[in-house]
Length: 67
Length: 129
Image (cartoon, rainbow over all chains, first blue to last red; front, side, top):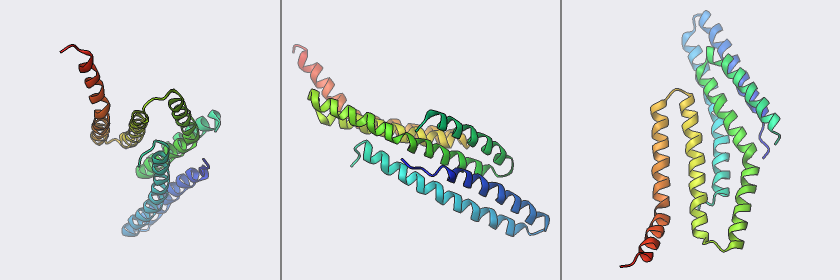
């Protein structure tokens, strides 16, 4: 299986950068913007995870003779 | 996939997740889930090999393929349920993990009913009336 291991570091990087942006926006007093940034970053990462999860379930279905 | 690579991956993910947990616990959770999925997908080739070998052996020894299919399905359900429960437990939702495990157990029991029925019928046939 060719899994993109770089994606793991990507996710960690997104998390750290989002945390930074959140802090900076909070310092600037834009609390609502900070929360939107967090939410969008969360959705992006969630999308990556869900795509991989879908792949895993498809593979398991194929191997263990579901259907 | 080399075992050394997987262990190194695990270490890296643990460290990154520890760093991330202080600021954004949600991202740490997603990171660990993603890493778990990646490890699972890397192992999938080996799992496929083992399952195919098992099927081949069953073919050659003439075991009823229906039973083998059921057993393989049960193993698949166990893998998925275990993965989901572990991921949820990592996030601290112990009760939700218990529910996932309960669902896995119930589905496995329902899948095993035909085999249990066959066993009981065989025993009844052996017993004198």
